[in-house]
Image (tube, rainbow, N blue to C red; front, side, top):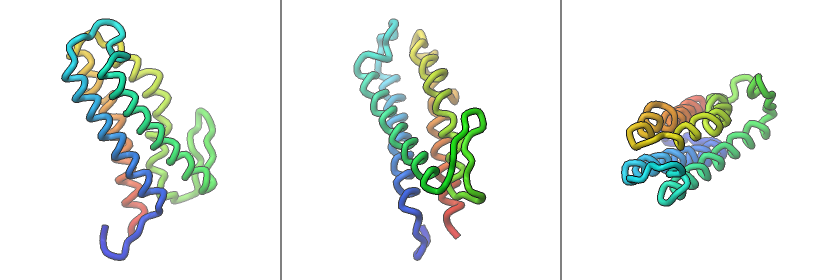
Length: 150
């Protein structure tokens, strides 16, 4: 950050959790590359279960902070419509990835866990499903930082 520029403490906290989510997503990838048993239920066995748990914990810690910041600033969520935020809200870029959490949970992760082999799982992981979701949050945080700095 340039000298004299300070960010909203909530954005700093959101940045910290987005970084944690990116790191734990990377750890899921490392774990995926290290396991050999892709029989049914592979995602629920160690060491993958622990890696997924850490990633989920970081995701929901991040999501909670985004949601809390939106609500504190007068935002409201309407199912099917998304977040209604005050005009020019500096955290607005975070709305889209936040709104993508249900799809990530209900579509992407189950497909990932149904993958019948490392190759199939890597295609879902690297092909946008898992990594793409983490990248979307990181890009949204970067955009929010840009909107928050003069």
